Length: 321
Image 1 (cartoon, helix red, strand yellow):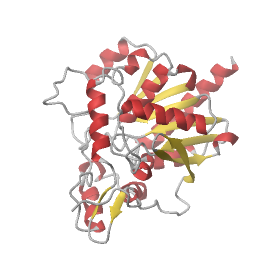
Image 2 (cartoon, rainbow, N blue to C red):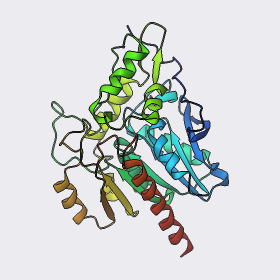
Image 3 (cartoon, rainbow, N blue to C red):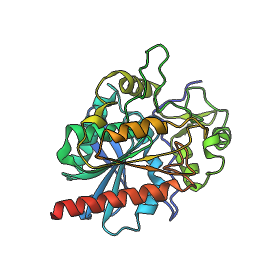
Image 4 (tube, one colour):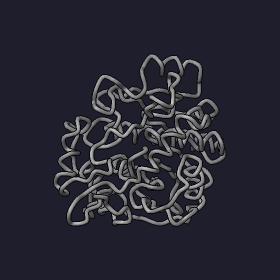
């Protein structure tokens, strides 16, 4: 059975714990991009943060970080659902990373922000690095979360697997028999076994489509495939960090997507890369894996919020000078 991708994604819980107080749409090619906003309104804020999620995720990736960041007066976090994901799932192609560049630029233009702190997780790290490289005047600072570096070894199309490979549950066209089964798959995933909380639960529910008979994810496979292919073979996005001159902080998780000893970014490779790129400041975040560095009950979200705060402060000092 195939679930209609036009089915409305389930909303996040509307309790006081939801940090995203506003949602709006941004006109892009083919329709409208859904964008969530936490903290102050963009036109009433002292600092705007554009946060970009990974290849199969949604703006709900930033739920825990947004709450951590809310303590900062005057900050605004703007988080889109990328084309083909979340409530932007019905947007048509063409998909691919160049289209995301146009969409993200449209978001910044829509909120009337010339410069923002750019933050990205996994594939989103590559996107904000490319945005910073190609439009440096829009980047007040850059924070990369377990992503954004060139592939550490040559790959061949026949055996390539992108760094943001889909290793989360419930992310295939094969539906689950029920919403409970869909959520049970998430709970069983090793990345979340020790980090499950209300934010992970809300994240999983948000992009679940349910037609009364079966449940599956609204994320479009064709969007994921196009983005993954571009990341490996477009020759532009994966190497964008080498063209960035914006001060950059990279936070690395020591454990991989399966909470295993295969991190997305090998430490030896990162050390070698950072030695040749002095604008890159590296932070290792113990007790996190590829997903919990940004979402759920772990040390990750607080460290990410602190890194964003540091980037905001550095941008303010630079602007004052």
